[in-house]
Image 1 (tube, rainbow, N blue to C red):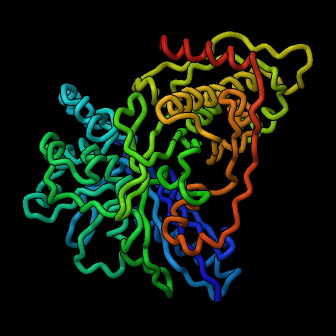
Image 2 (cartoon, helix red, strand yellow; image 1 turned 120 degrees about the vertical axis):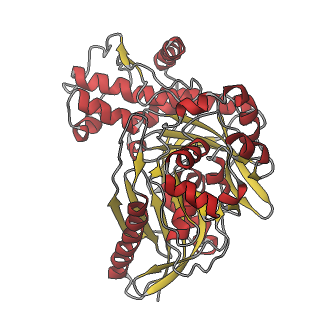
Image 3 (cartoon, helix red, strand yellow; image 1 turned 90 degrees about the vertical axis):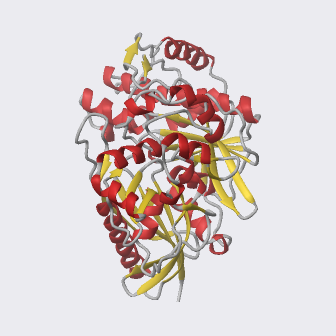
Amino acid sequence: MSTGVLALDQGSHASRACIFDESGDVCGSASVPVATRQPAPLHVEHDAEELAGSLQSAAESALRAAREHHPRLELAAAGLAVQRSTIVCCSRVDGSALSPALSWQDRRNAPWVEGLAPQAERIRELTGLPLSPHYGASKFRWCLERLPAVARAAQSGELLAAPLASYLSRRLDRRWQGAPIGVDAANAGRTQLFDTRKLDWSEELLELFSIRRAWLPICVSTAGAWGTLGLADIEVELRAVTGDQSAVPYALGAADPGTVYVNLGTGAFIQRPLHSRPESPAPLLGSVLSRDERGALFSLEGTVNGAGSAVSWFCTEEPCAEADLWPALEALPDAVSPPLFVNGIGGLGSPWWRVQQPSRFVGDAVVGSAHPPTSSATLLRFAGLVESIAFMIAVNAELLARQAGSPRRVVLAGGISRSRWLGRRLAALLQLPVEVIDAEASARGVAQLASPASAANWPKVALHCHLPHHNAQLQARFRQFTELMEKG
């Protein structure tokens, strides 16, 4: 008999499940796509029941796949990572959804949030976050005011105003018997109701947003007894719950304060673990990575909205095939100077925080006398777009260093981290070694949190390393880029 650890990752486009065997290898995996609805301007949502069902299906499919290689496989534990800032209003009685799952991308209550502008600095002081309709509190208010089923449940005492993590852990728990429903600190923090100093709901913020503590789950440790999942012929204890980005720093083991972690998905998320709470994180975000009975591990975090989403935008605009662009990009010489790209795809995250930013190419490409025939105008513009992602990561990494001191290295994860062209440019910009995880970082991280005893026996993950090198031309372009971004 062999033993595995199940990692569940519920994302914007799909629910994924991976099972790690005793060697730390993925022995079974599955992905189930989920639909995203945009029924009105600023509205971005999912069917909450579909999210729960897709996660169950992915877990069962991954188990079947794993048992093709390990017929007697048992599961030691399961962990769950979810989209932070996504919320669901549901019934405390049976766990059924009373609202859609309002996505982290959703901004439907933005006009109401604008009325809280005089309290923005106080909100940031308590939560580490800028006032924003992307976070959960204003979405709870919208549901209470616009959805009769939610209002009735609030009056009767049956409402659970749930971060997605709490809804899913309750909905998938086969043995739930009325126990208190919990939320971990990473997901509680993205409601904008969580005091990161007290590691609990803030009475001041609950009053400000007109949310009752009784409607919310209780704040608990990241790792613990989160319920029991039923999969085919077995049950497995859910032992850790966190946010998708919060899991990434654990992909290689314990989160390292000397490392900058960059996860490149639809957006890019740049994190630096800290043992103490960041008091003045602006223009970055102050977050909680994990919590246990001894306290919490915190992080400074930056965001780049236009990463994978910018690549998708480009391939639609040109139009062109993404699969052809990445290998062609690797053939470009390091001396190439593509047109600069003002990357406003999805708006600007840190440090600019502009909801809307027109995107445009600036200048002409310079390729020198020797360049491959693949250096078409489309490829050079694509190079400029990818370079803009490196530039925006570098801006955030420099801010992290100013606040938390110089790091030792950068670790990249996520789909487009496989671009060596991007990795080399980051190493030159930051003058740091850039190491790439060729693995599902969120899944591996939450598996480590769920079963540290199992993970202790896993060998180290092989990392590809880009070493720092001097590139004066690139540094000059970086200065030009930052000037353009400041001007807007």
